[in-house]
Image 1: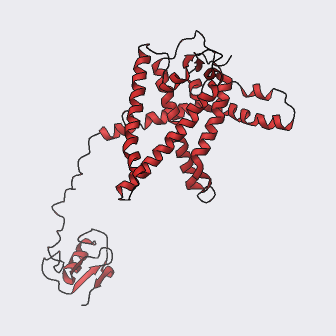
Image 2 (image 1 turned 180 degrees about the vertical axis):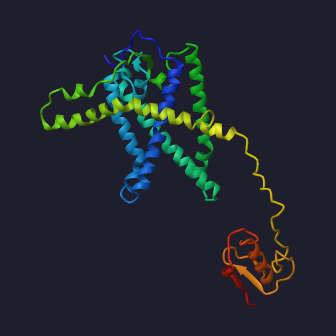
Image 3 (image 1 turned 30 degrees about the vertical axis):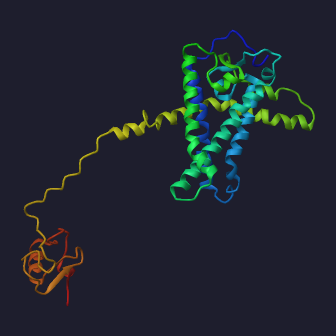
Length: 325
């Protein structure tokens, strides 16, 4: 029977925290996916992506319902070979409705939490901009961080109790539902297990579509989870490539190139000839450089060196242009 208590070994705290971290990474991955779609198809998906949170909740509900029905655990719990077992009596209300209680804890509660966090971020931004807030909004802005801190401390205390075997429930929510996490899921139901069943009637065929889709997702879920974990590790602020790059010392400023002793120095004034360092006489420039010289100085230099005195670009007498003021 699904969720029935067995003598299997309880999940380790490492697997519990790893599963929780993996489950929390699904929503950021979905948000990134929606942002990519929004950039590629801004007009087509503009109205649809307004309800991205609701679409994500529905998709997770379909997947988790299939996973609970087949494996007695969430999709991420199955990834770590875990299953849920209810320690309550079989005739109790919570045991008879353990699947729906579990669905509420993994779908509805995270959805409400995300909405509250978005509302808090919006109020905080308005408060920083000087927007007038109502009394309820001010109370919410002050009490919500305290509530989050309280919930986090409750979870930490429960983790410590679970680590030292003072409780069999790895989280406060599972503790209230009487659910334990144990090892036991070894295989995921294959797609052929569903397609091989002979079903008749249009309603039954339509009903099997979510199961068929969920089973395919369950097959590719390990690859997706491995990819998410790799990306999370790669870009982690503490251990990933971003930490490695920020820990490197800043390179020193590049040294100025050495100027050869034979290089012609520019005069302090633009009205002086770089060759004779005197005010221009018959100012003349070169097409290839634009610097201005005395006509006689430039003529003698080109006659001897066949290049610009400043840039050393090849030039001829035909490149000389007199400037008439």
